Image (cartoon, rainbow over all chains, first blue to last red; front, side, top):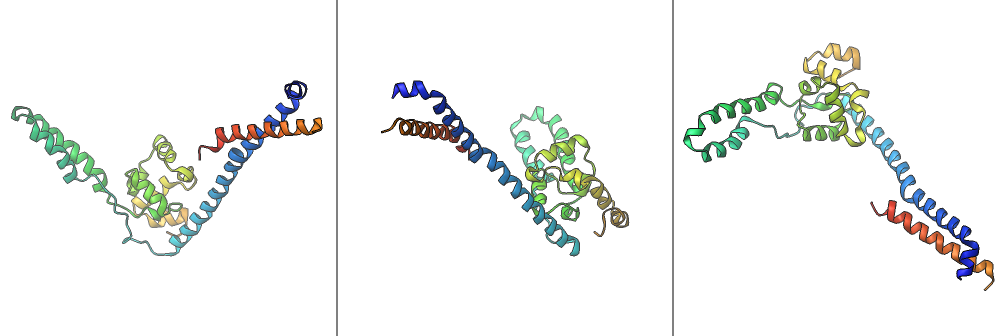
Length: 190
Length: 30
């Protein structure tokens, strides 16, 4: 046996290399191909969903119940602090706490939850993903800059690239301004 | 056993080991 190995080591090595290559193909390369196929299927599904949305009237009733940082939440978070702090130190605290609370509350409160699915290219799944990022209104999307788009885009998994492809920012800007005529001129029927 | 068969069996073994290595690297993750 050792003589055989010594004599035919190159054949054995070749077989080993072939084994590794085949395993790489089976476990790694072909898997990548499958993901691409799934991606395509998802895209088609998304397109169908959106077509259905385009044809239907805006659905105001099916808004996502998004946990928004309300004033009450902020107060709840702030109260244990003020309660535990000695009386002398409470003076600056309440001044700071309401300020941050109102900051947190005004952003969503100024523009209550919009039906983000009105943006073409956004379906129910994306609405949920955006809600997880705290994005629930057109105004928030309209305010995105390039850095913000890149940051959100990185969180969108298989939907990456949709933001720029479908120009969500321009769509959201028009929808936030309620400029339906402008929107329809540029993107088609709402 | 003829010598070519011994070599063939050894090559098969080496192939299996290669597959095992590949599986350990790329197949186990998911």
